[in-house]
Length: 183
Image 1 (spheres, rainbow, N blue to C red):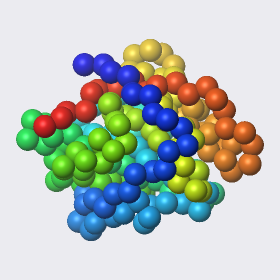
Image 2 (image 1 turned 45 degrees about the vertical axis):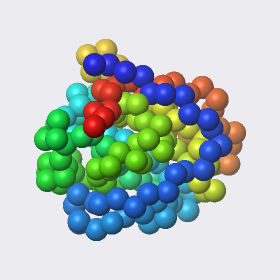
Image 3 (image 1 turned 90 degrees about the vertical axis):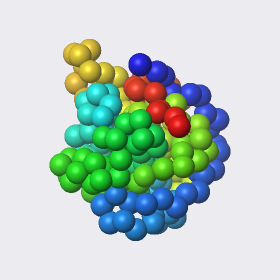
């Protein structure tokens, strides 16, 4: 089922978390992934066609901006009982197959998804250096089968504005994707 991301108040502080990383089995906190200039928190899962459509650009985005002082993290909050392909062992495979250069964390309790008010995957949250929300929404205008190239433009414009100390673009389009699989 296709769903839009919920509207979240800009300026809110990033909710803290400490979650298990699928690749290392270590607990990773928000503080551990925060970048000097800002942080991108991406809610994704393994099976969603909307995530699969943009996963290469997510990795490119992280690789392009990590060196500029931005931190990146992906979080899966789906119920693995209902969707075993979104379980921790499959997350490790998904991260490895897609060459993730950022932690991929499992929110088994779904508390983090609720704290961030996540509705769908993929869903992107961009925080500035003070961990205040400056963007929430889509990666770009591309969707599976809409013919628009995946380029990460929506998030890239925000990161460029932060990096260059320019005003943050006010146009923030909601993400569209698969609804979170709640317990």
